[in-house]
Image 1: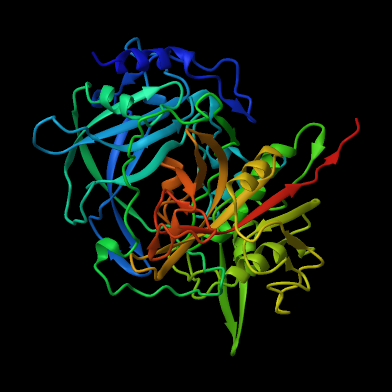
Image 2 (image 1 turned 90 degrees about the vertical axis):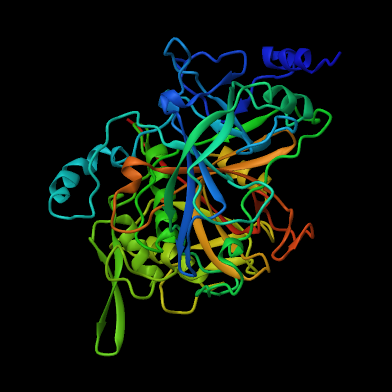
Length: 524
């Protein structure tokens, strides 16, 4: 007689799990964890399946194989209507038809979901009291200004997955069959668990359509303009994250999962291709939110509101101006000097060196910057030092001695984890490639979490999925979970190149930057 049900319940009741060690202390008022796995059914609207159409510089990739799975933490309730608390979601996809002889595809592997009480508020609430009068003054005057949201509006937890496991296809998908399980601790991806999950009946879930155009980061080697792929659209971004293949035995680190999670806000709406200035601004504003307190002072001069570095000309001379002038991201964007920026719906990529000059040029500006003390360090790029009189200094932007020191040839999960654990902000720049290994674009995001369980490493990121003149992040701010590991190089899966891939795909992290605030101690 098989013993896997006994093993499973032993694990689920806590004999196989220990508490997660976290660098972030959650409120003691958080909901109590449930001690067993619980199926999540469609009725409460707690989960959403989406088919992604990518609208990128390389062209439209419509009705792709890429799915995005989202969880709404506030709607994760038990049968009595109480919040389930923090936990992990696993999704098992079933084929549309056929017998139940084969196991379902383990398509979403331990997506972390924070309880609503543990999340931070939406971007408009991340403005300190000294700025609120100015906020009210400019809110009606400038269309860039976001409107406040109610407190405790948690961001959805999201992850990419393969809508058509085992095949490369195209065309619309209207519904899928799946079993979705919640557990208070990560489930080990072993055969016994997969067999037990197969005992839960599959539910039918609708599949919505969604458009994602998040991009705008030039390659670390200097490339700025991605070119459309010559291969079929379905493979022009590589394959989506593949389902988990369960192993027969338990991983070595089952008893010792660790994670560090910072606030998943602020997460400001981005203009088209504005990911790099937004990532910088989100990082700086996070540091102010964390360190500008009753006993400490560390302040960003501008407001964390939408804006652009608008391009202008005087004869044949080009220059960039922040619009509005009191926008943090607009000031950073103006120093990054993107092409063709006229409004929130226009603008080109930021080059890698434009990213460095944009941030450091803004910080060095005695009028717009004048930021309190900060220090920077990085992994990735060929430059041991970036900034003033070093890498990316072409003489066009004054950086006033600000530099970043290299601490590794390529970004590593361990370095990102350590930087987050020390209370620093971290952003990454990553690139995507087609199935043949050709560069097709890049993106930059703030990393707000890093975790390890089941011998796997994860990062949590935040960004704006739908760039442009909209307020998509006010209603549906995007956070994503990624498994990171060196699983291959562009066009050569399984051949490591030292860079971290994201979810085993042909997407690679090229660069990571750490921002350290050095606040002033206020003596009463």
